Image 1 (cartoon, rainbow, N blue to C red):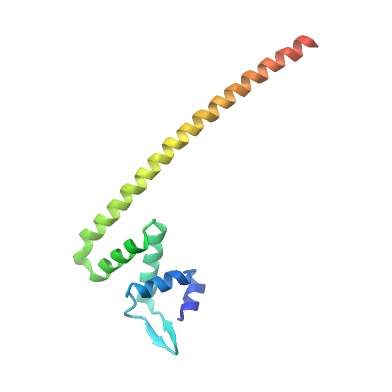
Image 2: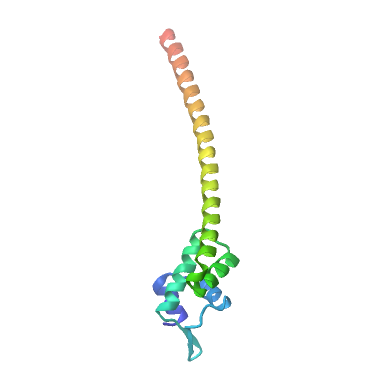
Length: 130
């Protein structure tokens, strides 16, 4: 498959495909008629790169992780450490967002309570005037 075919069929941006080549991860990729041709191994690697980007990995982190992955099972501890660090960052961010939501909910509650009070005050005035 050519770069354009891979991009279209698997919804992989050309920028990711170019990144893949820049990382030097495309040993299995073959050049034919001035275009790259991808095999199943390349597609699996590209899928992993997309997943890492989706998880918030930066380009340099993706490259480091992918090079470890290609080295094989002997790098499992190093890859686990990278994933653990990203997981911790993600959890920290989730907890921060939860605190922000709690604060927003409190403010929303306060506004609702004030609206109820104002409605009941306004309703009583209308009732007494009628």
